[in-house]
Length: 219
Image (cartoon, rainbow, N blue to C red; front, side, top):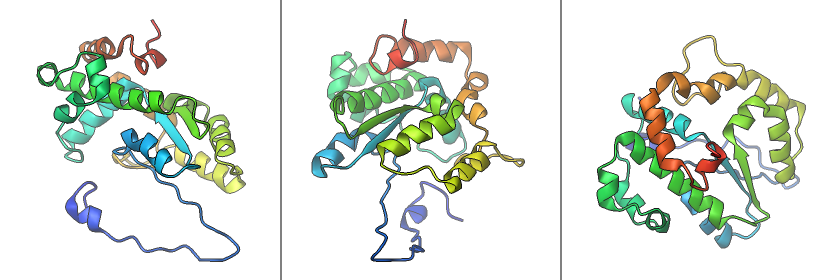
């Protein structure tokens, strides 16, 4: 059994089913969560590379991560040592000691804030950078997709529209953690039923006043 995130899963070879043709050159897309902070490095190494940065509500991020850890699908490491060494951490006065003293919800929130803020600051003004708010994508899917495709110089085809309709309507059976097909509205707001008021206030207290946090907590 291949478990996402396991060593066996990382070694699993996916066959190339693409029909090669000199007339049609394939476009390469990389979807990554772990390489978020490397966005500027990628663009510097390969000028012309386009980056679509999807920012999700910090409460949704924390709720999803906690759920993944509970299911044994994600690491239980908050990587506080790595966070403490980030320049963004020094800017906000986060030290290794303060990070270790935080609750797991607060540690995950710091990770969300520092990583997203690093990308936002480093990519500011770059014409090949496009920021997308996850909740906008869930609520106004076709409009947001149209803007993303325009940024990527792609056409929104009927095949694309059909896939969006099918995937965003959800599933009749139980949704698994890594499923692509899920109810968009549930994906955007499900955290409100998962987190307690205390947890939400902890998260808000961490991001309040930060560049990334002001997206969701402007006050």
